[in-house]
Image (cartoon, rainbow, N blue to C red; front, top):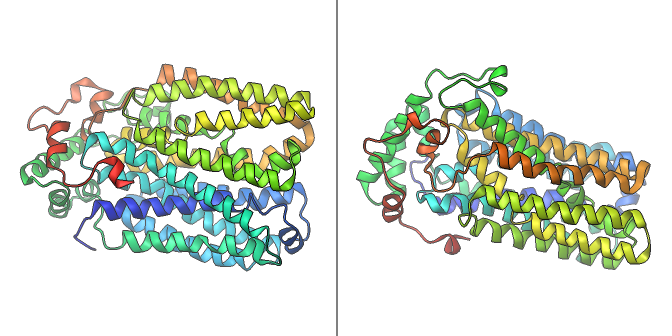
Length: 483
């Protein structure tokens, strides 16, 4: 295993993994209605189309469950990311060559399993290799910005290929996902694993070696290693039991932290983002009634807006903290989504155009708030011994809720029409009280001091490293330089 650690390569490797995630999330949305795709898949009905799209999500849930399993931490963050990317390449080849719905679904399943491994492990790898506390949140949040960029890019590529003819209209955009997975493997491979993972596996020498490459000052690296060891000792013997997720009596509140992360991500993906992501062109064209070309342009513009907003919210997430971003997001999203539902219900040309504007407003708010902030929160607050389990389970909630909305959403729209959007409006409203009453502010704390947020008795006092000391001893650029 490599002993060199280059945090910049790690950042870009994980970012390319999230570009791949975004590409897969968006690439079919722009080609589902094309004659070439419809012909190759023999004009699938609504249920079959939903399964083609949603199979990726259910498989991503499986990949996250693998990453969350008790034995997965034996492998390490680095290896899981590369394995996930390799599985995605195999799945993409099968999907791009598909001439039946069964073959396409099989390819999408493999892509999803690989994607689940990448997105469940990537944020942890980035968080655990970021030396400056105030940069950790932005750098993790920016991952969602790259996912949104992948989706936007896929939609614009789809739009460009609508002017071509033949099966290349959809097969080449699908196949292009391989590029992002190859970049992920190439950038991650030369690096060592996370220093916290080495210390978790009792490989102190390797962990200390990596920390000394992250920090210029060896004394700071030694102190951080000591803090990590203290954190591990605090968590010794704390096992996760089912009833702990309801009444947690442990000192570090490990089950509570995992539960909060699972619910947070689950609520985020019941707000409607995946329904909008995956069926953007269909929503504009079929449900709102725009012309095909206009619908494609609106889809590209909306996904581009989502990407820009995710970057903005990530870069400035330290201003105000995680909770304020989420609270304001839930409040404003609720206004836009309720207005969207009401305008769809009226079902006139004028109200449908206004509904499209409300959808853009919702995306404008969601993109800097509920798109990146949950990723930041779960990567920070999970206990070290159960970090792979906590983040994996939280991400599995994302994919399970996404599957539910993407599979059931279009079927529900076909059965009950605009009323299906009431479902998403309800969860936009629920987000506010959940964040207000259950989540604690994690901004400004090092990962090793996160236990104190849940139990002040667990404070690390002796030899503690302040955030300013960490910042002074880390070589590298600012967040803006690293994007």
